[in-house]
Amino acid sequence: MNKTNEIIEFGEIKDTEIYLEQVKKNIHKKSFSDQIAFKKEIKKRHDKKQIQMLLGRVEDQIEIKKALSHFTTAFFAILSFILGGTLNYGLRLAEASDAATIIVMVFYIAGIIWFALSGGESKRLNKLSRYKRLLQECLDEIPEKRHFRRRV
Image 1 (cartoon, rainbow, N blue to C red):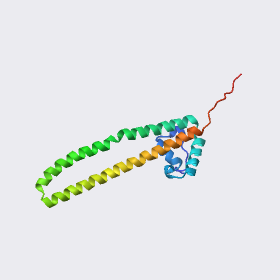
Image 2: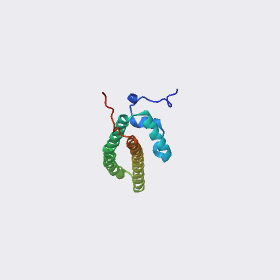
Image 3: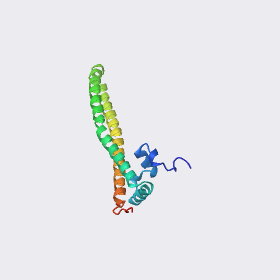
Image 4: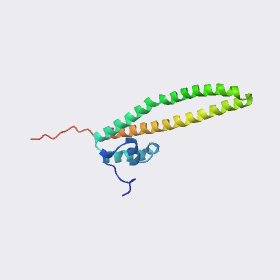
């Protein structure tokens, strides 16, 4: 069996997001019927306690992503100070026509970097949120054990 079709044991899972991606690729973009099949596969492979552990790990990843989002803001604050100082010094040396070109180029480069960083983080957060919803639905669909056998 090759590595892509191999079912990973629960204790061997290192990264929840990667594992869920291996169960069914890009399930967060698929139709409801595909998502229902994904939930059936998860319920077939794992018991309620394991699904709760997976859900907890996904929730932790979401919280970490939200907590680290301030680094993007800090990056652009530092970048603005550096570029402001550099532009101030560079504009003294450059001619007036070159100065406008430099300012516009720096603006576009910073915009492209911001768009790439925020877009990637947004997509990953969206994917994790969908996995969280699907795992929660799996837990909701698993029946509660209400009757226990009495040992005599």
